[in-house]
Amino acid sequence: ISSFAARPKPSTRRCLIVAKMEPSEKSVEVMRKFSEQYARRSGTYFCMDKGVTSV
Image 1 (cartoon, rainbow, N blue to C red):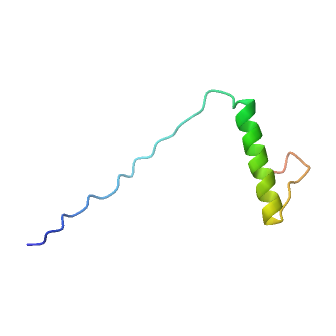
Image 2 (cartoon, one colour):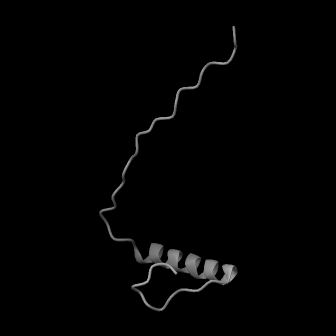
Image 3 (spheres, one colour):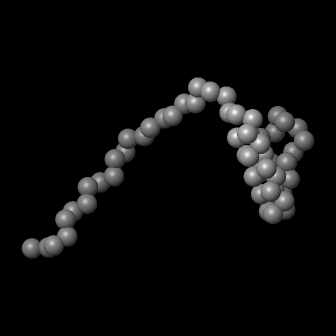
């Protein structure tokens, strides 16, 4: 008899969370600073055309 119990399979349920509020100015500023620092460190840049989401 094995001393290890069979592990149950992970659930395949998914949860969708929808934000109903606009982000605060502070959280937007934190995200902007993070993004700019990441771009500097990775040698990448942001496109000036706001319609472009990724290059």
